[in-house]
Image (cartoon, rainbow, N blue to C red; front, side, top):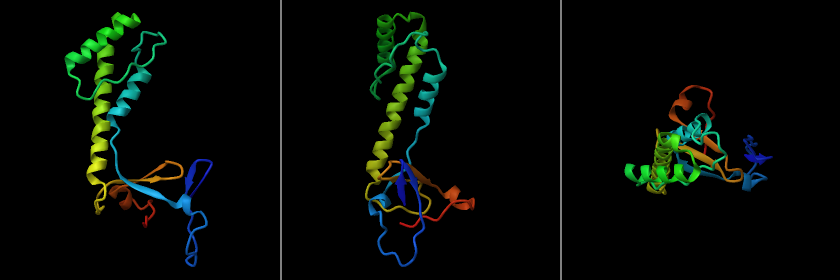
Length: 155
């Protein structure tokens, strides 16, 4: 394994090679798979909706994951009044709800990562290999193992 121009690549070495020439580039971290459903919804919403009324308004700060619906409505009211987009109040409330859901998802991902840290990975567990040099992800799942196109991963 290695990295060239920020792109991770895998190289099959000869059997007689004891230590690869680029040991630093061969380091991977094994992490539990993360969920990005809410994050994808938020990105799609920001990209496709007219939440800012065509004005060049920065995305507001994300509400806390434990914010109540009433608190989100208060935050939305303050935001629309300070930016002059009163007609977009429902859209801004939806934006804050998506941001709260994204914060909850990120917290759940971190909690899961802490929960499984140091535990044995068993057959059927979905994990992600993070290349240390580039930060690129390699996802290994049970389904990919059966489709015949995946490579065998030895750690």
